[in-house]
Amino acid sequence: MIVNLLIKMKKLLYISGILTLFVLMSFMNADFFSSMTKVDYIEGSKTLKFTTKMNTSHISDAIKINPNTAGFEAEVKKYVNNNFDVYVNGSPKTITFTGSQVSGETVWVYFEAGGVSDINTLKIKNTILLSAFPKQINLVSIAYKGSQKVMNFQRGKEVNEVSF
Image (tube, rainbow, N blue to C red; front, top):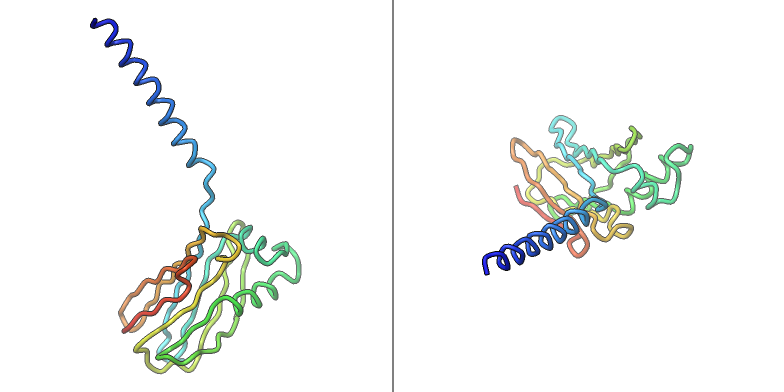
């Protein structure tokens, strides 16, 4: 009786160990899709400065151009202009692309919105990489006059708004 119980327990542990191994293996090949944007308000110039960090291969897949080619920055500029909108106090702001930098697996993109004297509400539409990668998550961290806010964007939640 005890021997049969020990054999059953051994089989149960063996099966649960195999199942645990399969579950752990399912996480090994999972690709993580995200972008992070830092927004800083520069009071002297009344400007919102944006710095976005993206994965190089993800953005190059989305815009269909090799990051080592001459036209890469122009395509990144066009892509960001088409996939990132800013509204301050309900009014749309024009974003100006100021540059990008490829650094290995990371692309840094810089842009700004001028003429921002005071912010009561900041609304952002961020669809960067959302159409290319269904599980994409975009985080935006905003620093405004000592206050810090964080927004998150994903498919189905492309627009977010914060108040100051």
